[in-house]
Image (cartoon, rainbow, N blue to C red; front, side, top):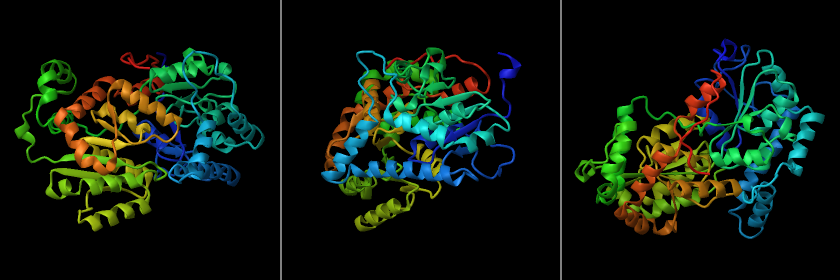
Length: 456
């Protein structure tokens, strides 16, 4: 590694403020993120391509139109008949084609061509790239369009694009992929192989995993959390009795945790479930249905339900009203903040108390790597369909049954120890050191791939 490949100032990390996926991927990278020297240092070190300081009016207008389309489509699926038809039409335009048979998928879509027309003719994104070019540090984009900005408008630093799902659509690759100088940071082997089908050269793709939040600075707290979680998820010890000795050999070496904790250790510890809505507020109704189904268990103290409302105040109010109606305390049981990155901090803190994460298979699918079993809510769109398939492949997720009867099927799952198995599968089969790996790649010039990727 040459001295010139080291960047002590860090990197520019650019996301977009649309939904949570692209910002959630950027959030754990804030430790290596920096801002242009003339920018207000009190701002977040993560740059939002669609809302940054002094963004030109014409650029903001283009982004606003895209955001309205995104949020509208995310909500269409809940509208009977016509809404579902519109949703499926829009999803078709962004679909991920079948992977097999392997074939050339490099032909650009109409949407991608239109994106490049805006970049080239309307100079979309040029102001941002000109600003960053004053000091061209490595650039990490968690949404493909700013990476296209950088390449088209002559960015003088290295350009990286971090994929935020287990598989990606053609829109992630540039118009002329074989000549592109964008380096892709892929969270999975499937994402890498998909990008190759789109025409990206293999040497331009590095498997890094997906950046996970640091939920604890102390490994002993993490170990204790995992040990307690497995005991709660396997109250009769069926899973631990069958696999305990084998898994202790592996897990204790990597986390310090033991699966041998007795059931007595958790007799007064409630099972804690966190249900998370998407960035556009989709599926909030499921959270209230779960609340109604588990009411008796919540009021008796055997189960705790945390509802993650995101940065959407109207969703928070819906959750508060439901809890008040059911006589359930809302304090400390709703995760909300008006600012997205502040919400991510609160969300990460709540994860330390969480035993089960219930969510649609968004980028949160990767949080299985924290040893959290995922209850999979219905996916919205082909990317989430791919994430759901990946959760099944790694054995970390189980499809939700009818939420109205959660109080019945969830207790059966606990009896079986299935959720404990899903927690361990996620811990063992999902890369957890993506932040370090990305920093090594981008800041320190080390380009080795993660080797423990076993699943497409």
